[in-house]
Length: 157
Image (cartoon, rainbow, N blue to C red):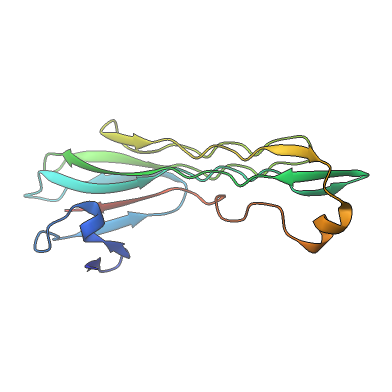
């Protein structure tokens, strides 16, 4: 593994040759940020991850028992052509909202690198009325737990 200092990404996964990384930046908070392409840079390696989908509701509400499926996550790698000094808006997708009884989790937001590349957010997890015994619900966790995070973008040049 050839880590990129400060961003915790394996450069081989991004397809970045070992001697090419001159700089890197990671955005991991939902929102819109501007990235200015440094002098002498004509290509950027990017890993974009959409916001995680909200988990479906799992638990008991009144006499009903629900099972919740975990929200999804989407991620992809890109190599994009750029021009020095170009200002590119980087949009980090927000996490989806967890579901509630009879309401599925919502999809996560799209993460994009201007109009150059984008990845949709993960789908929200479904919520289903279940015949599972209440004792089973109390003995185990049936909510999804890992998908409800904002997206991120790692840019290397």
